Length: 45
Image (cartoon, rainbow, N blue to C red; front, side, top):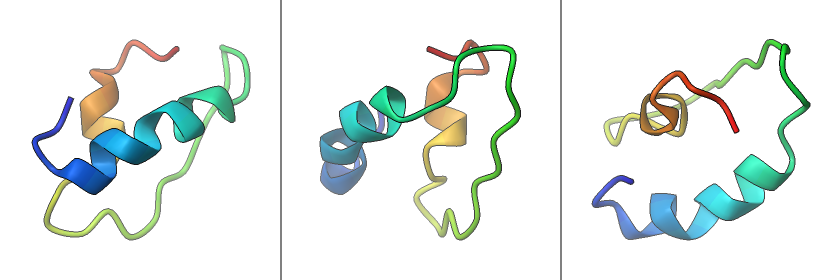
């Protein structure tokens, strides 16, 4: 998980609201912290 505190705090909410695999998601506005997609590691929930 990211060292960014807000990212770590929000990850459970994001993960709980992702659609079941296989699904496509689009992340917009990840900013300098990298957003959620890199933290997922490509493995999904």
